[in-house]
Amino acid sequence: MRSLSLAALLSFIALNGAFAQKYEISIIGGYPRLSDASLGSIPLSEDPAPDDTKLKGEYTYGARFTINSKGYVGHEFGYSQSRARIDTVFRGTDAEDNSFERRYRDRIVISEGSYNLLLYMMPRGEWWRPYITIGGQTFHFGEPSAADWSTGSWRNYGINWGGGIKLKAGPALLRLDFRDYIQGKPYGLDFQDFNSGGLYHSMQGTLGVGFTF
Image 1 (cartoon, rainbow, N blue to C red):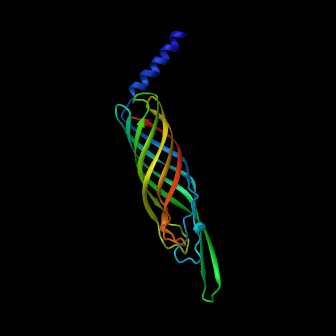
Image 2 (tube, rainbow, N blue to C red; image 1 turned 180 degrees about the horizontal axis):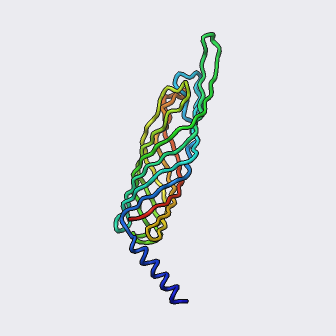
Image 3 (tube, one colour; image 1 turned 90 degrees about the horizontal axis):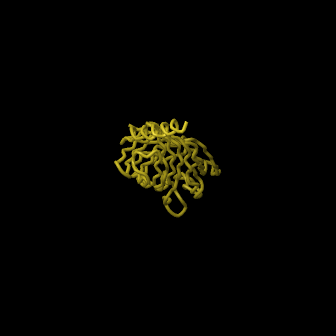
């Protein structure tokens, strides 16, 4: 029985070594926690308030492709889409000088392309590999269907950082990631005292499955 257990352990180690490959492909899914920071008001809206427009994340999905060195470095390219809810309000005056307020709620798609440098704490070939990461990304925020919306969709750029762990058995891969994204506020909406609104944070936690080759 003891020799059988030892043989199984050696087979597991050999199998992992056989699949200690350079490339990885993963499918990911998770939750985007978008900042509750105020995004401003639709242009031409009367009495603009900072919190007239806000976003709330719902879910995210995508894929990541990684090229690993023989040691402790990886280069990763990713693409994902997140679904988010947007709430906004438009205030105005009609032809008879009556004030009105229209509130809108819609769902948008946020597309993200990214490059990240991975710094592993274990060398390639190990069955578990914790790591830290830093990189850059571009986000494309979809256009809401609100009738008074006038700024269209929005693209901006930023940086991200975080960490995670990869667990490998043969060619199969399981990964857990957490990343914090920093960029400019989307849509370029109006504020009472200025025209745009500074930095915007979002956090993303994902679980992924994939394979090495």
